[in-house]
Length: 289
Image 1 (cartoon, helix red, strand yellow):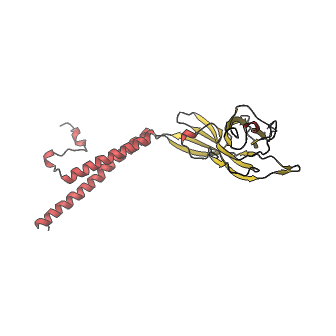
Image 2 (cartoon, one colour; image 1 turned 90 degrees about the vertical axis):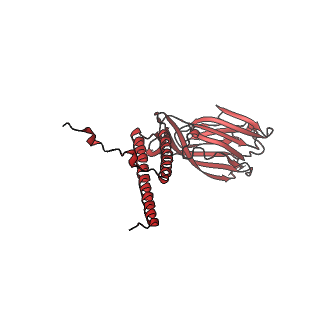
Image 3 (cartoon, one colour; image 1 turned 60 degrees about the vertical axis):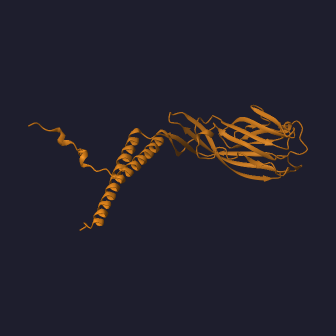
């Protein structure tokens, strides 16, 4: 007699006329299918959505001779555009007074104020840039540096990546009601940040924190013209964000666990309910021994 392959079947079938459908079993089956469907789609959306993970290491992204792009948009409500300029200094000896490249001045409040926008690059060394009247041909009677910062960012824009961190913490900073005689000092610690997507494309940006102080500056000749100072220093620690997708085998393992686990728990619940109902019926009939 030949070997019967059916003997290896661990999923042996029970004849249909030997099974007993119940209302409770139907309700549990419907709930079981709904629950499995919910878990499956939750796991599926998790599988197709990349996870962003972060790591820290000591590095300075890019070449040391590369410069950091800076974008600033600031409104000075009580200082006309003809007086507004930006100066850039650093520890390498750079000293640009009245930097004008990629600079836009838009009159505001009937010409009494100015919306100042500028894009420039800074060296990877400590330094500062400041909005002032130093480059003006004629100084105003009052260099009122009350201001509203729309944005101040370093590096490439990562606003649409939904990343944690402080890439533009000075956005919507309102000092428009400040004393006209005051200078404003923002001391910033800049942290290099790398973002790498699942395709291996990288963007380099910079997060920063800041401390603020305001004061009235005096010199030997009397009160010095006010200015808005942005002093910066780079942190040697780099933050890297990169996208990571769940491997296909992990997704399949989760799906199998969802299906198997749900069926097992549902079977236990159904068996418990059925057994309890049978015991209750016997008790009502007085046949419980």
